[in-house]
Image (tube, rainbow, N blue to C red; front, side):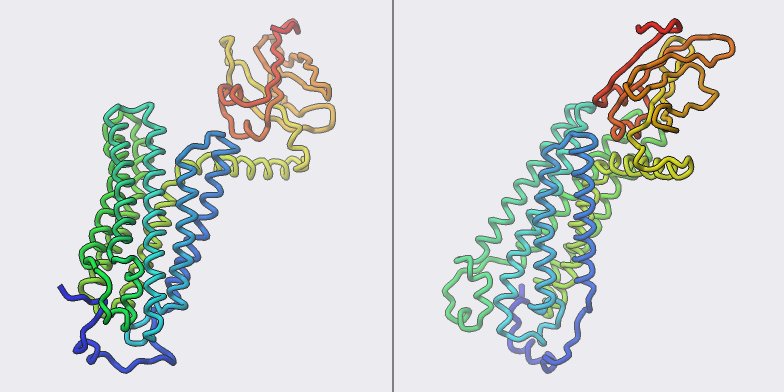
Length: 414
């Protein structure tokens, strides 16, 4: 198997004359991908953390791991951009000054460590999210989740150890590209031609496992067709990650076994690697973003409602939630009404029994029904932000703080 990273003299003799003035490159594509995808990921993870800490108030270990993945992912993107701009990643190998070879290899080694850690944290975070759901699922599914977590932990530790032991001593990984050091031969070298492609293949297997696991489970659940399609669509987004990883694996094989112009091919590896890693972050965060967008949409609707009704945004704390009777002595639809002045809340005329909350939170019973019928109502002083998206009384009772005045038709508290 040829060592394409160190081309023999006859191959080097076939290369064109070096061009250090205006060499051919792949262009700014890698810089755009690395900066844009990492920037979006920062926004996505920030929204996820806001939802977990301030909306659902249920942060978990999967959130910590996605933060670690973000840190190492951003570090990788920075290293990739530095490699592209300073160390000639994306140039033809014959247009690269020989003195840049050693720092270029250092850049590659550190970038691979960051890539392995980031991707492993992403996949373990996804599997821990499945573990959150496993309370409603079967024991075999929980076991399968732990198998996936163990696989990714072993892969992460194993490949980082491989990077450390591939050359002995470790600095030979980059110093061996110094012609003087290489001719001395004071180092031992493993097979990059075998190790690098295998690491990529095992990574894709981990990607595929994390995607297929929930799809198999969903196919066996008795769910409404529409809900099943929605869940399948959500989890199938991970197939994009598998596709990106597969393309990266193809170029990883070529860069160490086929293409003598390895720096030109390396550019493609990093482009697909960026897509694989950052789309993994997006997929891992997608389920946790639902409360965030629900809150955002509710706020947008509130803003529009304020503009239509002439109520200023500063009046958002002066809202009343009215719980209608369901006609059978139970609690029915929850309605939100807006303040018209400092003392009264606006309630549509079609509402029957309702509670009016004055400035001192005293509830007075009013009966607007023509037939004098009585319903069960509650005046509610709630955390408005948390209840803004609530559509059921259960949602409201889980909010805090809550003050309830329950009255019967005679104005007596019950």
